[in-house]
Length: 99
Image 1 (cartoon, rainbow, N blue to C red):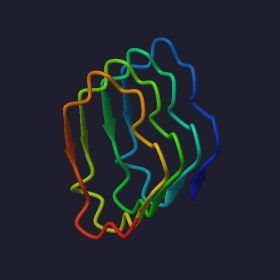
Image 2 (image 1 turned 120 degrees about the horizontal axis):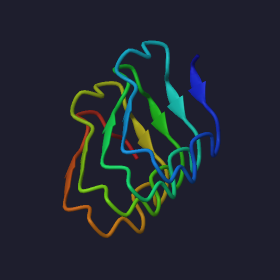
Image 3 (image 1 turned 90 degrees about the horizontal axis):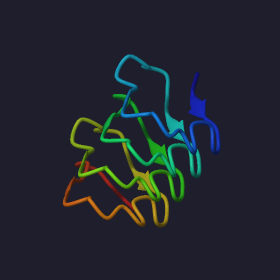
Image 4 (image 1 turned 90 degrees about the vertical axis):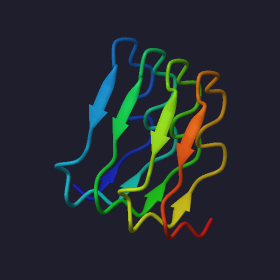
């Protein structure tokens, strides 16, 4: 699996943690893929992630920290990827982010 499609996990009212660390082929996560997951607190990103779509974590009310530091190949984060996350206070950006 190289790409997680649009809205694939959107609107999951019970999703607290999602762990992609073992998804070694996953390169792209599509628009709105994890959006509107009101209790989501933790996302563990795939190690070879290259691109996050627009609004990927939009409206995740309980998300307080996002850490992309282990995503050494992440180059692009889509517009408003972290929009409307009122609990979000800490974002650790990836080392090679271009846009």
